[in-house]
Image 1 (spheres, rainbow over the protein chains, first blue to last red):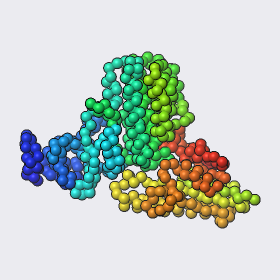
Image 2 (image 1 turned 90 degrees about the horizontal axis):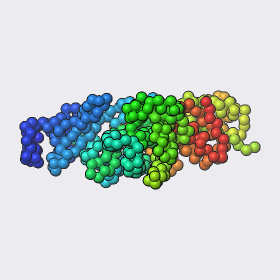
Image 3 (image 1 turned 180 degrees about the vertical axis):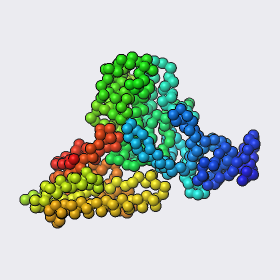
Image 4 (image 1 turned 60 degrees about the vertical axis):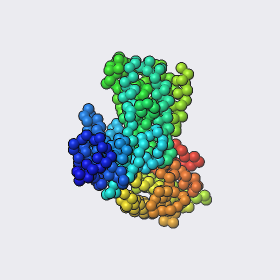
Length: 321
Length: 162
């Protein structure tokens, strides 16, 4: 097997300087065994594995053994391969625990749906010799939107007046991308800050990771809408402001006395939603959108359509400031 | 005498059985009623299963379980004195059902709206629905069938049973 790998590498990468040659895999069922210097064969294509992707969780790098950083031997292109991993796990949203499932075929279906739409990560899928769905993904060179926003080195007032309008406009575009999924009876399933990336060069906002699935409820899109609202709150505040972290952002903690329970998130009880109480230059039209996600709201957004409509109206007002 | 047509929204839960019992207490002394116990199908998400065969098996099990409960609910009404000839059950299948092919089907977008559509088409004067008692936060994330029905109903009476 090592000889087969060595021969493949010699054929496609004559300048390869590595001295180790792993195994050739046509069946990716046992993905834990596939590692550096192995080759995954998918149909007529071959992918040289360099490492497992990592996910930072609680400050530690957590290897994702089912996600491989690879180089496609036929053209030298770096790719990410996501192997079939039928994981079931709880996802905590505020006080709620939702059973989540990792669904390769959901992600494969969405990749087909969004092909050519650069608001989403791009790729394709194919089955390995054992019938496991393998997704071959283009790598996005960029940075998470929240990290990018966090690193803008200005005070909030400057951020809000000089940077936020463009960010807001692009974010509305990202919400329209989620609307596109909903219109096609799909949902993202894991709308959160680290799944929306800003691509270097183009500056495009791009959604990643579509493999989360969960049982359906009366409003099948409610979780996605909540996720979009959470990101918006972060973007407006340039941070998630909580009753415990105000001082970290130079805000006098005694201001907390002016907050009522209704100023906090309906789901995450210590997250401040009524940001206008802190930054009085935030237009009421924008703050009103945020307040739809507060515990004092009696009307919630049932669809992304409703959210987008209000955001567009607010953007017009902000552009006019 | 005009027929009193009632639609009981039913999902097999304890709360929906309370709605059935509530109707039984009212309708047992009536004549000329038409009572339909309605289940709007919500299929398990296909993405939760590794393959279609496993999904279809679960769909079949779910359907049988609900039909058993619909039959139980019907028996409950009859046992409370409601005229058997005035009670029916309806299983409103999903458009994506692997077993049912029908042009009139549930889209899966909103159970509440499906209930209201059936009410309008069948000209039911009253909807009876159990209330889950969800918190505001739960309603925000997951939606609420009873809230959707109450907020959107037009031209009928809605009884929400706790």
